[in-house]
Length: 219
Image (cartoon, rainbow, N blue to C red; front, side, top):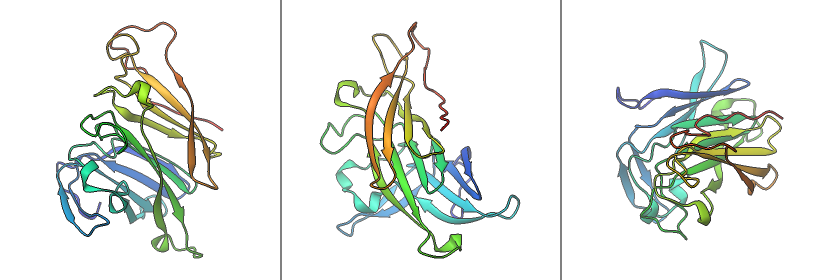
């Protein structure tokens, strides 16, 4: 990214859709402005960068900050590993932050993880530099599965037809230790609404399986 440091771990995870490339940097620092005008220095929060262009000549056109500018300082935290996993399909991107806090309505002291969904608007031009990316959904584990340290968001995927999003929580207890689970959402690209449809766990589970550490979806 344009603001990289040697310890950012830029490129730890990468996703491609057409001429757009989404690159995670889970340890990148950042300064964010909240909606009340406060500037907050977030050490090692993480970032996801959008590049566009032909292979070998792609340039950075945006960075996705997790919608912090639209949020409250009370739910922010450093070292969330935002960008640890990324996925992109068409005009939508998903960024996982497995050590982030939960929704503001829940216990913000726990780090169960989140996944952020963004939409790209080309603003009526064909120039990628004119694109704007807007946060449309924030996914958190259901209240029945909100254990601290589940790493919800360590795995993320979005189907090519944009109908489905999957989020992995590889340290979900599932009745044991670090057995793992995947959460499947139906996604309405017209409204940006993600609806939890169910949870997938391995039928034969053992401790430390880390099920859903990596995810992939087809149409």
